Amino acid sequence: MHDLGIVSLCHVGLAVRSIAEFRATWGTLLGIEKWLVQELEQPDGLLQLHGDLLAGSRSTVAMARLGDIAIELVEPHQGRTRTSQWLDEHGPGIHHLAFWVEDLGQSIAALGDRAEVTYSHAAQRPGLTPPWGAVVRGSGAPPVASPPGGPGFWAYVEERNARVPWCLELLDAGSAGTVRAVFGDHLVYPDPLCEDQR
Image: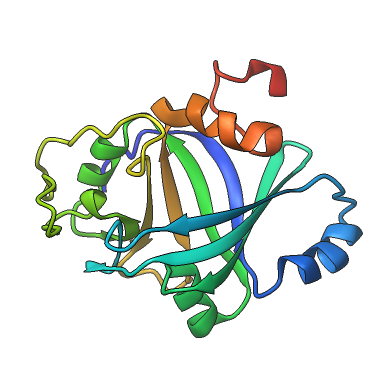
């Protein structure tokens, strides 16, 4: 695998069955009081999971800072997502580490055959041809640009031969400003965007 162009850590993601339970137990133990909780809805056919286009889904996410680390809790409610499948297969716990990358398209191309884009906007999955005709890159093909902060600014990646189950979430650093407008200081952003967070 070649250089993925990782810039910095954004957050640690946990799959949970109940955000309220986590906040009342681990959140209290860790002294985390300030959480940003949001409902996320995805329409039919926008996302893919292991190459299959998904029906619509709904999840709740909660973001918080613990010193220099950001934590994301994901509680799925409706529809099939990587998190709902993960909870069925592995139960609650660490689901992903999210990293900002210089260019998401180039990072995906650099994966080669060792890793799979398991969950993403459909246009981020190499080899997938969505019915709405988006241009999808294959391995080694030039990257397709997605608008900053648009639906294609992230992708979950899993190493095919890894025995430790978890995902990488790759986030395009060019979208950091747009992401910060939505999630504020609850996440960690790449320099020089947020030098004030040190």
